[in-house]
Length: 323
Ligand code: FAD
Image (cartoon, rainbow, N blue to C red; front, side, top):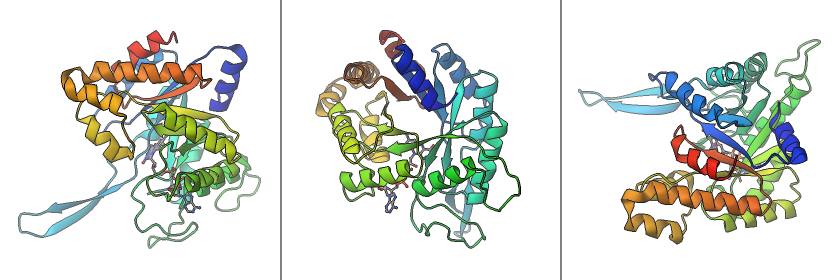
């Protein structure tokens, strides 16, 4: 079933809150069993769908013993499509595969969508990906002859074409591939956008290009989400907006989360963790529970938890929410 169908069905039947989860593929060299173990636990929590992140290549520089520097491009976490296939077909849980512009040509994106449809997966989250330096315009041909998408809205447009049966190269009698498409939204604005309003205008481009729903970056201050949601509605975005939440798991994350995700942490969360760093997990869980309850009370009955493969951090919360 598609994400949008899950949302409609849960809302019609009152079977809410609806809680989805996001997991990451194992690093290159690790066993897929680690992820399967996580999905086994998630399966007991009856998730409507599970998102699997995607990771483009990163360039690594190594200093050799002789002082020269070698350059290598590696994809640290391959396996998104394979893991989606396992979750969808072995666990019979709907899966959302993340698809990136960054690091993939339009042809490779098309190949991934074909593979997903063969695996019975009809949900994708269309993203640009990070490391934007040197991005060429959409449709530009890179040195290796590959045509690229620049922004997520361009990727949504490409998926829209495939939904109509239009592929990169014209194919006679081609069949449409059906996908439900989500896109990312940023309650605290995307770090490159000059203002929240400009960022919301770009989010609307993604929705106008055909996105079915928005899922947000993690946030720890519900007021920021409420203001963002209001700005989206004012801008004419009518699709569902699903809040993304993460449990703070250590005092070290007080520094790493803002740095990695360009978000603020409220003092009411930071101060108790600084006072009792050994209780960071419990404080973090209590905070996420409070956020979840308030969101549900305010009518946001679909929540998305970024678990980053630590399912233990959310199990108790989900139980307390009565899911
Ligand atoms: P876009 O929507 O393309 O926006 C990027 C920036 O460009 C924004 O500042 C926007 O305002 C601006 N912009 C957009 N369109 C235009 C335009 N036409 N003209 C000028 N400016 C424009 N990253 C991964 O690598 N793998 C993942 O699996 C992954 N999953 C994610 C899941 C969620 C729910 C979220 C919120 C983020 C995820 N990310 C992931 C991170 C994401 O790739 C980065 O945040 C990235 O920097 C932006 O992606 P985007 O799709 O929002 O980009």
